[in-house]
Amino acid sequence: MSSSSALPSNILSIRGSHAAIHTFIGGADSAFVNSHVIETDQRLIVVDCQYLRPQAKQFAQFVRSLEKPIEKVIITHAHPDHYFGLEQYGSAKAFASASTRKAIKEFGEATIEAQKEFLGNQIPDAPTLVDNIQKPGVEKYDGVKIRFEEFQGVEAESIMTIRIPVLNTMICADLLYNQTHLYLAHGHFDGWRNAVQKLTSYDGMNHFICGHGDHAERTIIPEMVNYLDQAEQIFQTAESPEAMKVALIEAFPDYQGQQLLDAGLPKLFESRRATR
Image (cartoon, rainbow, N blue to C red):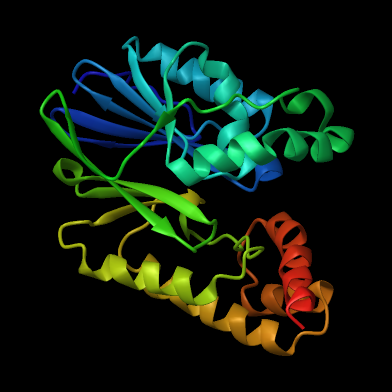
């Protein structure tokens, strides 16, 4: 399909005759978080919007360069690195699962307030709320089928994934990470592992677009399961978030995104103390 052939170096594309997916990879300061735009013959669907304003603006500029109307903006889950950049899309209709929509409404202001002190104008002053509910199921745009599926109790309380069969591709959001440490704050080891293992049954899905890091192939599934297995074992014996961070870095020395451990592990240990 026709779209700009000269892409910025931080954008990866998967193209077909009537559809394409362009992935914008954020920088190290946002743990290489990904945002996407699904391009069909006549329209665009934006998926997640970046974390920090400079990168959110860059991604929005790329979306506008495609010169097609935005059908909708989808927020896959209620973590700020995926929805803070929603402010860049003005009157475009925003969609999320019911639970994600509710979480942004209830906790968005407090999340911004907690981060303003050290991020300042790099993040919005107030959250842009999501007005529409994205339901699971199949939708068709310009003849291209898109399947939405919600997973609960995984990296976040709810994550919406998107399959585009004509491209043999699945946008997994933070259900999958590639060569990047996981955000483990919620502690849903079993639910997350089961969801990842379910992906082995998705015949025809050969490209898995992760929430953090580069695009991946099917080998990402056992890699994710291995990380979750080791992380859970370390959590059972580690005495502190700091000790668990050291152990995970030793176990996965080539992984990026250590700030995700700094952000998630203290919350993981808080939940353990609360249940004792």
